[in-house]
Length: 350
Image (cartoon, rainbow, N blue to C red; front, side):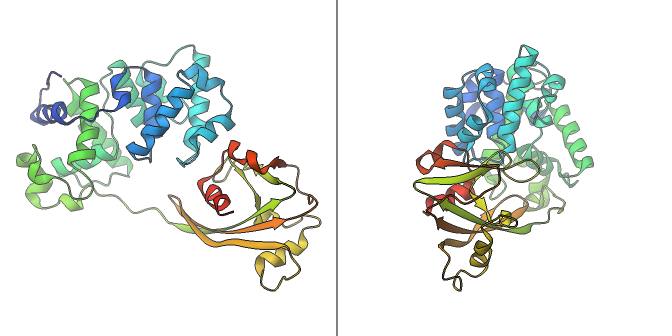
């Protein structure tokens, strides 16, 4: 790769990238679909885990048209285990947008209009697939630039995002946009890491502000705004002659579109299930109830909340009355439905 840049930072960065770049399958193509898919999967996901999912998606749906033709259930099922399921729903919806357009949009502004695509993803696709001179700004870029230039503006503020975007765009000027952006990603992931960065072996150490002023561990700055809350869930797995009842979660809550067994909060108002409410509250005293505790206090951590779940097994000889949204399926077919990782863990305990 030819190293071309008009500033010392970019020159050194691109030279480092030429020697240390990661060999990733989506780096060996200019197919915008493959690149877009990798960017969506790798949000909130480690590369090694995301790599497997990327290959599975590309094998099952090699083109955006094929992904658009899939059902949401099929996409969610293939996504199972990655978490943040809104990514999968947006991916599917955006694929249908692209098919309606007749082609994959080839510039930042039009790519940005796709469902679930933000500035970072649009910049990555526009620069890597189409060579547009637009800088990507993600966690790696924030970290590298804040340390190198000594910028202490919080990265999760409007002012911070504008400042870092402007700096990244200025440094990109005159460079091959695809190489520069991928170099920034790799440098932050491999060299200027969040913990224990390789400062003593860093090619930028002589001009790094944070290293010179002893602030490597303090940068970048992030304003604390996130409040983590707890939420308690109770699931009841009903078993009736080899069948079980599940429902699809509706919009406006976590795990939209995924399937789950009977949720304890739904017991209120169920005709014929009143005795289960006391069994859930105090199973040790409800000796006449067939409700069997399987697991208590299973902890599942999301970005902004901690879930604590109790899981019960209820074996019956007759199907109880349930709301219309519940369906009965064979237990052996449960794996065909997209489940949250929490429900998947709880079902595994059976």
